[in-house]
Length: 321
Image (tube, rainbow, N blue to C red; front, side, top):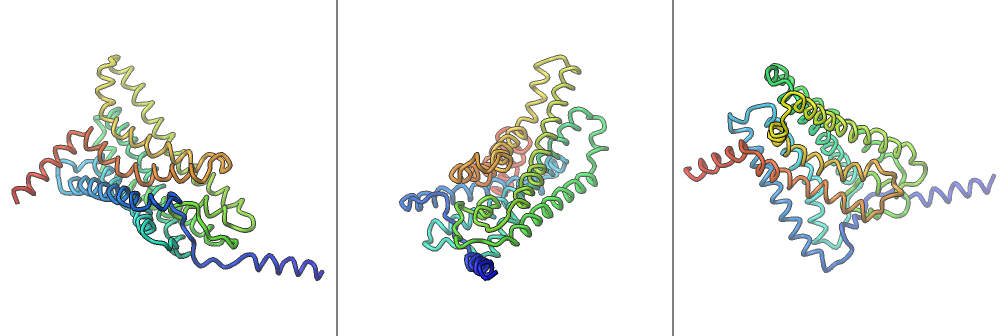
């Protein structure tokens, strides 16, 4: 009996109450820190400028007050916030010798990262549905995609994303963490934190695989289904590859964004933890949390004539003023 008490006491001593975590960052090479600071600062500035410009013209230009651009405005807002969750702290750590983040700050970062990420995953599926209705049901488009329905869909996906992230942040905050507080990442994410946790993390891992997997895979398959239906519908209706190519070119921007977002996310959160290393996870995280948000406005600006025209009109008005 005395031996059992001693063992329990020893376990309790090893489970320290963690007040802060140490973010090890993108790389351990100190010489690269100033260079990476400039690179990621430029990327962040480009992200805020590009997505901010799209959000501004979508709100201000009456010609863009349609369901497609309403959701594009939501996407631009999400991309700005998504990068803001991780990049400012990363930039601070490039110039700091102390790369610590408080326990509350870590859980908050985890919450908002998954809140915005899961909302964007669902938003991309809603945008695919909008393209499906526009192409396959053109006569009923304005009736189906009413302002009320668009607003309801936007509120729904933002709400689901919030509570999905809240589930993970609460479950992760209840874990006991061992003596090590070093997170092998540049932000607080679930998988690196689970590696630091003491005790049983099977429930957390199950929630990550099942709930987050569903949030990611569900919209992804709905998006693919929408595009498959569009292709089949156009092929049998027009019978012309030229018309098919012309119509699908209007969806090309969205499809490129879908691939850029879902590919790294599925690799990170769907594959078993043992099949991906920490370094791979960090590189992939840079792709979907840093690179994708800054590429999105470029894709929509370069391939969308209406957005380019709206940006041109906004710049001319600014010059005249």
